[in-house]
Image (cartoon, rainbow, N blue to C red; front, side, top):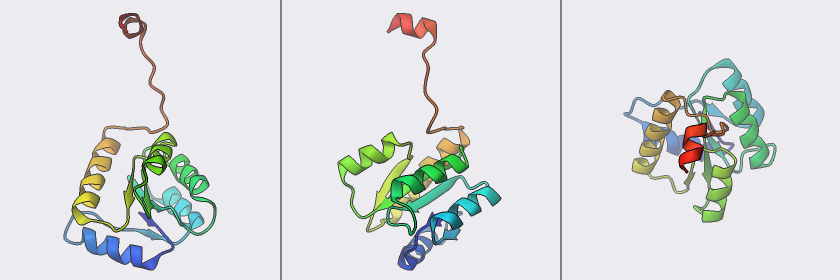
Length: 136
């Protein structure tokens, strides 16, 4: 799903995934995106940083909590390292900066889908077993 209020983003993303197995479901705002996730188990959500409604972090958290097996990827205007770190810290799978590049988009989607299939949970904390703790 591409959650963006920018119609140009939808068209660009649709054209970039044309001819691939990926299908694009669009949502214009946070409420529409969350409703779509409640109706259908979508493995990946591309969420625009500038999505209409709440601030991006609140929207991001709402989408990530709706379906635990969904990888949320933030679409943003820049590839700022601080923004990337913050996004990942809050459980995002990745971020993709504009202008979108087909090879990068498809590689990120494939990687995210592979992680979802392997039951990757962004909010799961890893606990070391007693043996691993003793070794480290």
